Image 1 (cartoon, rainbow, N blue to C red):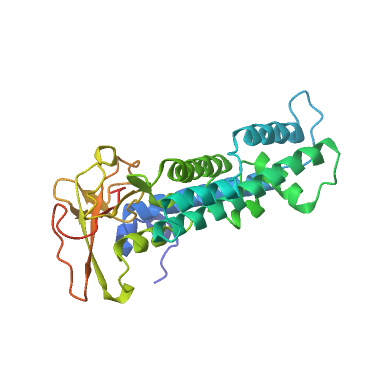
Image 2 (cartoon, rainbow, N blue to C red; image 1 turned 30 degrees about the vertical axis):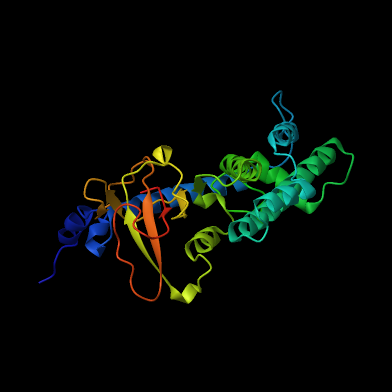
Length: 301
């Protein structure tokens, strides 16, 4: 007996076109992330194939728009770090202290980024005016800035970012943190993600000169907000650090424990994590309060 094709077409037509990721054991946030990345990639592709020629309409041309943007960025760009002034301030704070060595390294890397941005923006304005030749790197910077993307040469010595605006804002915030540290001394709190080598700041503070393989760490998430932090006691030391965020899990503030992540909520206020260090190979027991360890408070939870 031959079966009619219509018997197959009807159930196939009722088949769901979208399969829930729960079938594969994935969280709904995985689908949100996939759809977001797909949309961003599609938009980037559309932007990349747009005509690059200057239009003849009455509106602002690409070159004029980028030149105006370059002038605004140059106006807001922080001044260069003066080497002898930085050395003088570090000498007052103790040039051989681990934290000050870390600060000097961060300032040197930030100065390379600021110098590169200033140089390229200045050359780009001259190239648009026709004073110098438009090189391949300058052409890439022009295209990227017009599309609100970070130029390729800027990304190499710096940090990834979703857009040029976010990247430049982070540059200003990073520089502000370093300048405040140099001019006013060691701050009470540190923006951890605002450093090039963030793991070094915890290592410099937690060891107290001990060998790294003899130090054990434990963590205790507190309910303290970074705005309410007071300087840690001198006999205890340590640092308060903020700027960390959870991905793939949520945080139960009342129970101070991990929980299932809600569907892509916006970032909330920062919480602090208490990280203790003890000399010796024994496991440091987490405890509330200062105890006897070095407090490192990490926020973003």
